[in-house]
Image (spheres, rainbow, N blue to C red):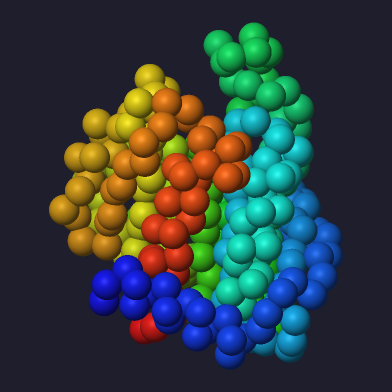
Length: 250
């Protein structure tokens, strides 16, 4: 199906499933080992059930993503898709705004990526308990450090865990953790083409694998989504829409 057809499918879904956002509500999400995650869930008007997108921030604290998550939430809610933005960093005591050696010089304790993967699956399991969410149409979107989590939640070693319908990663740090694995649901990785951060070569090496799409946007900024009116971010949203529309059509 061409991109325009996918976009049309989304517009049809929006007309059927709902319109503008109805409300946002904060939930306490049971995590592994007694951990409690906080997530803000917003859904379209109506009773659903709705597809859902889980939003995970990167190594900058949750508050630095607030405007990006608000824009993404409005975007998806208007298409009839619920969102839940999760502050996994606070649950793990991540209070600074950059990793060791990061741009602002602060150091912090960063949980291992597999720990954050567990948080993603815990959020998926929680959404499945809500009557207005379609458990078979839950998607994951991660930014920077969260983008690596996106790849892991649809990896073929996730058998027996709550399944995701697809995953999108913005500016992932691709590495050997992706080699030797297949992917059980569609995965979209979007990397800026002019930034020294991350590992675009390792990401691009995944091209050609079943269920994997790797795209580049023209940007020199790792956190290109911070310019919410910029073409790199808007192009990324369009590409994410294509993945979601295709999954919803199945």
